Length: 307
Length: 245
Image (cartoon, rainbow over all chains, first blue to last red; front, side, top):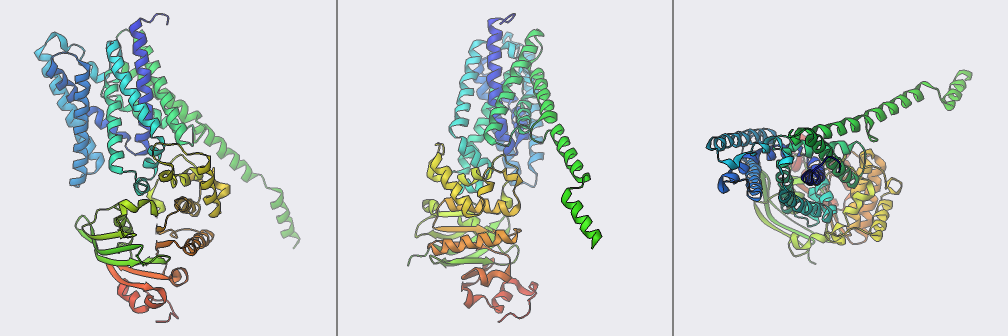
């Protein structure tokens, strides 16, 4: 590609994969009514990233991803525990975990920055995302994890649909809700940890939420919603990264999210299903039909008059 | 004869409220039983506990002389219509196909024969022309029929239905009762959580009065008496005129 280094092509490729994976998982989260859960979990991943760094003393991606996954999972367990053992509702529980974990992450981060080893530079990029800082090896890790996720989604597509639509019935058919909940949480955390380096913990949730809601405006089929959401996510990833690369060191996350938001605006207005324009046209037609008397009504009126 | 369902001293609770207190009964094959009782009597909870959807505190449940986990494929459950989000992007035929997922096998894709079976079940419920209609655009009665068609394709021996007649139109009510009677004729066993006392005698050959525990259970003509109604509903029940006691 013109003007793009070999590394930039790798980076583009990785955000394409990431956006695709996030689009798929985002649709699942949307129908599980847990869009905000992804926000809480990605914020909760930050302390794990820093601890992973502290353990190795250098930017070693597998450790940091492992740490991120672990602390996101601990966050999820806490949310579940707060909700089920107290009177606090889920939204409040997510708010608590999100802010406390993120605060803890920032605290650890400033400690690390004060310790000032040479290797910690770039750790800040996990907050807003810095895809340009990624190297080929990171991309391979991401690619592997994203393919695993894609496999889980395609392989068990009908199971996902059943589980998301009617979990009680699914259980009756022998599809264990406990297992599905586990796989769902595992997949969600997987997307988050492969995404935070490129998009950052703060904006990661947007990549999970926005493509899915945009896709909802175009289709009445669950399968197509997943595919469209994957395409929207992948597209936003590529466009956002391109903008960021040309901007020389601008953070990737905000650009990816802005691209996704533009796609959402287009879907909201032009969407074929319940898009604002389509709805307005339908309303207009209905009103015209009401105002114009139909021939049968006229006949009835005349008959009424002659009687 | 081995009972289709045998429940012994079953108890369950929601947090600190005990909703089922030592419930015991047996259901014989080929019967059509109505479960009646006031709001909060534990009717829906009973079904959920039987199907391991809600934890039980104590008691034994036997399906076909074995556990539910082993006999799952022989039990068809029709949850309350309100238990799912009808805005979910899918059509009627697709929902009915879900009833076949157990037979198709996990991680396999449904084929043409499955589609035909689902179509047949929809037709049986008078819903063939709505097969490709979005489920969000179906009326409440039509949604209920889709749920019933989904249970039909499972080809189960015992059906448990949670308020299938709540809030449906007269045509749907007739269609559902015709289907349930057909199932009974084919030797299947059906249990229905029901709320309309006026139709109990017409619809069911057995009645189970439930109010946290079993108040009465047996053939309708023996147990559907004013005394049992009073014991189940207490003073809250206003009796209609002309009922033989």
